Amino acid sequence: MASLFTRIIDGEIPGHFVWTDDTCVVFLTIAPITPGHALVVPRAEVDHWIDLDDDVAAHLMVVAKAIGQAQTDAFAPGRIGMIIAGLEVPHTHLHVIPIESERDLDFAKADGSVSQEALAATADRLREALVARGHAAAVQPGSAGSSR
Image 1: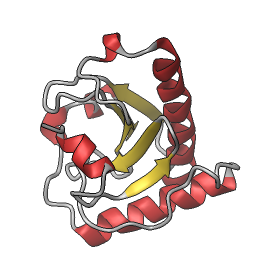
Image 2: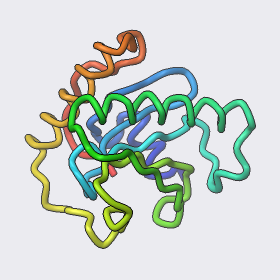
Image 3: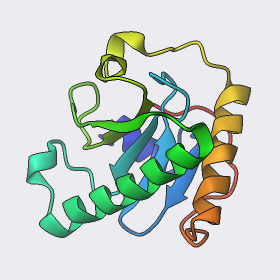
Image 4: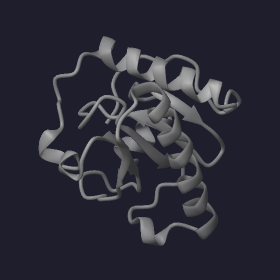
């Protein structure tokens, strides 16, 4: 059975995508810790990040860096944090999160009540920042719905 993230990638479940390439996608979580909280997800369904092919792992980090730079431009946080937990969905994913302090890296702060309109506006801001940084080829045009 396909993971929740594979179903989002395949379009069975809608998502607020901001990046897509042959190796991975990036979409917003429906329960962000802070505005701009994005998930970098490989297309390959690999449960544990330590089992990723080295080239895929390296690519995910490069994309996470580009997303973090766009988050910095769009939201002006003090830092960009990253979490690789992998317990809630058995499909590798990197949480890239605009933060002000380490205390912000806490899933207890996730807000599951963010509206689809707010997520769409956040995705638009990230796409614009990615395009401004020269990543237009990878930027996913607007999308609607929810993502995890």
